Length: 208
Image (cartoon, rainbow, N blue to C red; front, side, top):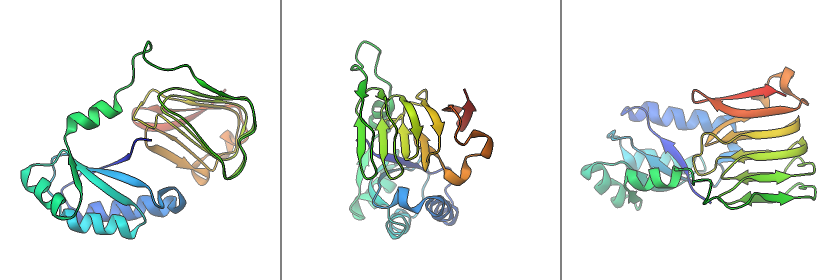
């Protein structure tokens, strides 16, 4: 599975650290042990400090992306890899329709503790997804039953991916790294047939 990207939107190291701490605080279980790429976005920050804070928050920094020469040297000194932006763009690009494999279809309930991943395609589940279960897809996720666990679509950056379910009771939903936890889901959407998608870089829920 591809890595989650932590994109920096400011060169202010203190603000970056505060942002990491705030995001992790929203869903600590989601981020625990999560490998991440740090996209510097050409900003210069104290990479060692950012990496240390990320590790202290339970993240696993693997490499930096879009770094200038000085930042790349600092990253290597911290034991991090260095990737070019082109590599990240390639990872995030959506496969052409003639390249995408057929959807993965699951007919059995997904039980607590189980994880299903549809690599490079959509995931269709014709059964319930229990609390404590996790379903992931590089494409969209269709659940013909209640979603009570976690569903992550667009795992390789496909921002057009969507999540459909017959009853939204999720612990977490995410599209292309943008997520909502249970407390973020408004009451009018809970236990309703729903579609989750990105609109103008904001994760939205629509009742069906």
